[in-house]
Amino acid sequence: EDQVTQSPEALRLQEGESSSLNCSYTVSGLRGLFWYRQDPGKGPEFLFTLYSAGEEKEKERLKATLTKKESFLHITAPKPEDSATYLCAVQASGTYKYIFGTGTRLKVLA
Amino acid sequence: DVKVTQSSRYLVKRTGEKVFLECVQDMDHENMFWYRQDPGLGLRLIYFSYDVKMKEKGDIPEGYSVSREKKERFSLILESASTNQTSMYLCASRHEVGVGGELFFGEGSRLTVL
Image 1 (cartoon, helix red, strand yellow):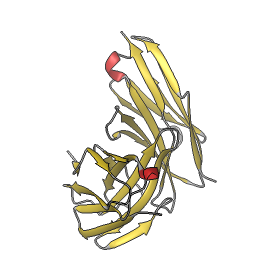
Image 2: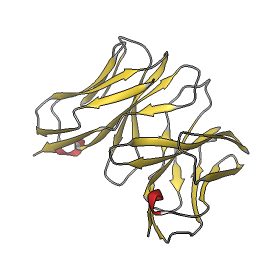
Image 3: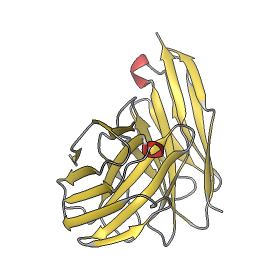
Image 4: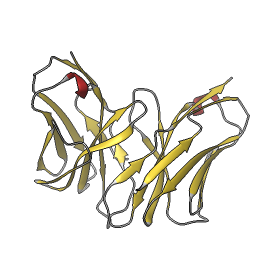
C-alpha cells in the first residue's frame, strides 16, 4: 500500500537553529514528490517537486532532497516567518492521485 | 501566478441543508480536485475532474457530488449536510501533463455543520 509518513509531528526551533523535516514514503513507482507549506486556516502553497533520487531543490532558507525511500526538507537559519505546517505528498506512476502526509508543524521562536 | 479562488472562506450550515462550494481557477488547467482536510487525517480526495463534464470518485465520495460545466469552475455539492462533514475543504488544480505536476490550491472553505 502506498503511504507517506512525516516526522516529527511538531518541531520548535529557536531563530537561527537549523534542522530537517523528514518524509518517508512507499510507493509503487514514484512519479513525483511534492513539498507544500500551509499557514493556519489557509490552503497549501507549493514549494518543490522532486522526481528522482539524488535530486535537490533550494528556495531561500529551504532545501529539499530525495532518496529512494525518503525526502528531507532542510531549513537553514530559520526565522519566525518560517513557522507553518509543511506537507509532503507523493504521486505514483500511472495515477492522478496524490498521497499526502499529515504534516510537520514548525514553530520558530524569536 | 496561478490563482484558485474558493467562493466562501467560512460557512455555517444546519444538518440536512444543501451546500454548494465553488472553485474557480484562472490558468486554463484541465484537472481539478476537491479534498477535505481533517486534523490527524491529512488531505483526502473527494472527487477529481480531468476535463469538462468528466469526473472520478476519489477516496471518500460518499455524501458528495460535483459539477464541472465549464473548464475553470468545479463545484462540490453536499446534498444533505451532516455533522461529520464539518471540515476544511480544499480545491486544487493542475495542468494535464501526463499524470504528473504540482497542485495549486485555493485558500480553503471551512464548513461547520450544526
